[in-house]
Image 1 (tube, rainbow, N blue to C red):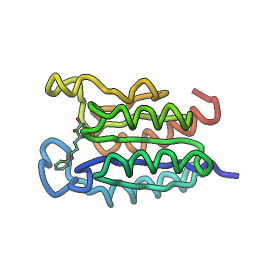
Image 2: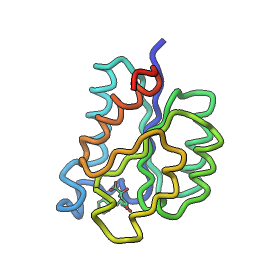
Image 3: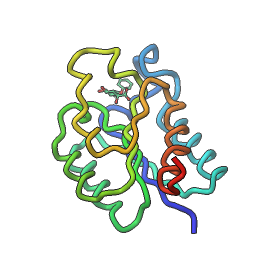
Image 4: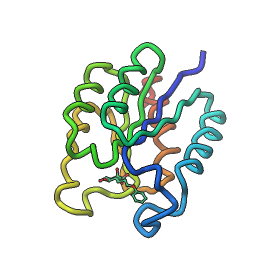
Length: 148
Ligand code: CA2
């Protein structure tokens, strides 16, 4: 049976492609979702793709993946740098996890240099733009199949 991956997007990522294009690129979140779905089909994985601006909803998405998904790709947006609750949820569900950022957070303001959720991540992709999402699918497939 094919592996099922949950892609979770945090606050303000619903604005992608409409503002701050010089920072976050031209692609909308729907464009990214479509690209992910095309790539997922190509590599034989099932995909769910979600976004919320609400911290507790992100926690619910993670908890909801416990019995339904084989891995998590998460761009927690600004909550990356603040959310113990998201870290705790990821640690609790213990799924293969990739942390993802469109921008290189280490090239930006100091407060973005610390990620609270990295402790729960098997791998991190950052600074590769929207392409990072598709790369994360390849990465999580390898982690799940122990090919990394
Ligand atoms: O680089 C990333 O993917 C981030 O997770 C994006 C977050 C930021 O707080 C993190 O430090 C790094 C912000 C997402 C905001 O997205 C927008 C998109 C378009 C217009 C405005 C905001």
